[in-house]
Image (tube, rainbow, N blue to C red; front, side, top):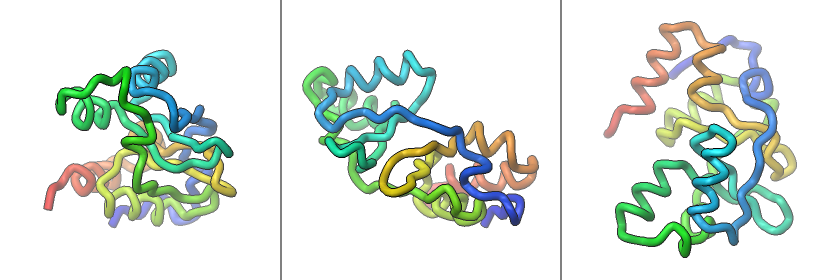
Length: 144
């Protein structure tokens, strides 16, 4: 388990704010939004702006394009499943545990079911000592 600073929370590490992708948006639109914002993932929100999932650039490539599907016809709702998130007050060691357990590299930070930020590997690189970052990377990229 990666520890992080014992008093840090998700709020201390996260990149604040994240624009949601609507469930009805297509994956080509998701890719355009990622390009325009310089990000590799977008939270997916329902009509009530509550986070229901996340779509990554890798999801678009592996689960859509590589499967022979047209990104202009596949909707975010088709891929946005299994949301793993934390609250802003979650201790950073618990957020890291979630990321390691689920082998995810981006973690939405959610308050009252609304996105308030994201924790990414870049955020962790700025906040964790090198040895803890190396341990985290090893655990997230390790395959059982």
